Length: 225
Image (cartoon, rainbow, N blue to C red; front, side, top):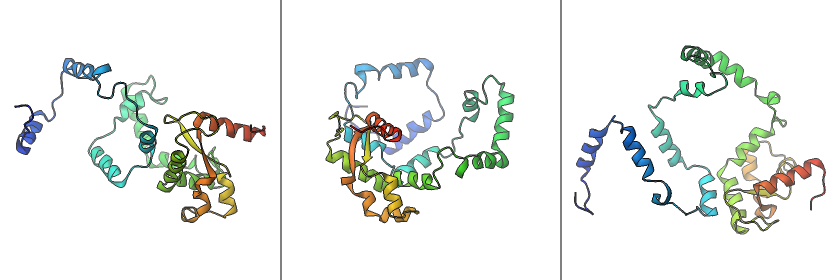
């Protein structure tokens, strides 16, 4: 095949079918792996920009979700291998692991496991607020709010002046829970409609490690300096 020429769709399909179900030999796989290591890798020495990293961490589009769903169709998860490395399957024979898998798969067991972590039984229970808060933080509007703050602050911790590298947090000046309580927000729809929640002037950019330290000081009643 001449350099720069392209295969016809028929030739591409014929080539695909010829290799369908075939696996490369271990030696070939190792050769492929080595061909992308170090300086041979097209991304060698490069880094994603803070903007790209934050975009990659954001919510997936419906199209992206659909592509992921289609890619997983017809592929059974390797439950046996998962159980082999789990606490339940450790040091057990394959037969024992299969029995454990069958036990875990029953609806009754699944329901019991689910109910044991619902509501007040959950260690993160906060009077019903946690599930709503999590849903809000996973919304596209939250990501837009957060990214607008990062962009305004040039992806830099406003307290220390350190540049972020995929480890940024948006800190609420007025606590999130306080805004929720003051506006009597109890539903997702009410949260989306509350403009105070999405005011970027109520947020500042911080490195995750510094954000955690700040909240620890607040919880311990220490002075914030």
